[in-house]
Length: 297
Image (cartoon, rainbow, N blue to C red; front, side, top):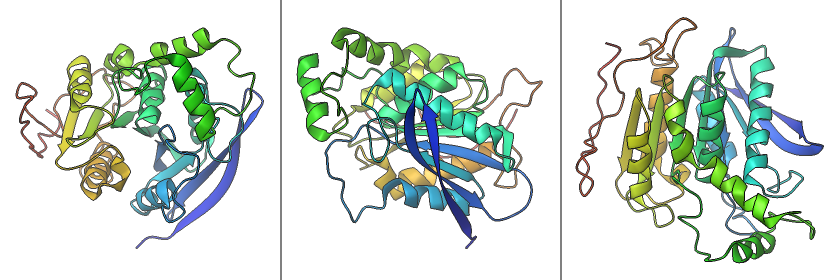
């Protein structure tokens, strides 16, 4: 097993301090980097026995990636209040950090987002060409389609209850705050990730984000794209060994860590042919789980 060094760092975004950690693999030379983005917290007190994203970052770093994790504003040890457009600024700052790291290969910078973190990742990947590939895990096509709250004020009260909105005078405008979720909706942006590789991973037992969202995003996305539906997996895909094995294998492939060369676009390329994980998108009721690689054609 490869040794990994961990360094605590902080990001400064709009006057807010965000807590972060970078995991560095052993070995000289430039390494591909992956920024792992958490979702929206569902409760105030996390499970103390769940090592969560640090464990995932450590695992990916052991496989040769520089892994970066951080708390979005309003969560964990970071300052501020939960705001979806603000989250995209936080993620841009994380990309800035990775891009200036001497040990990071600037041509191989991947995003891997979960749920709300996947929403921010799709938005940023669509707009920021420094991102070379992306994995979207349990990603909603639109945020408020999955909300259990019928009114925005109810959702706002929930955010206060779980501690991700901490200031009584936030947001200054509820209407503007709500529009941020609509602006970031992945179905609006996911087609702009192409020609960089995209993988959508979703559990067929996800009770939070229906499977139909994954198929809608897959249809909206352009090549090169792949989708993997994980049998029996629920919303927290980082707890699914099968889902994480799939994501890791795909990231290693597109970043050239599996010995087969990178699929990521070079500076002069305009498109990538072929898929990594294939399913039949026409059979929505019973998708085919087909894990094979066609390679670059």
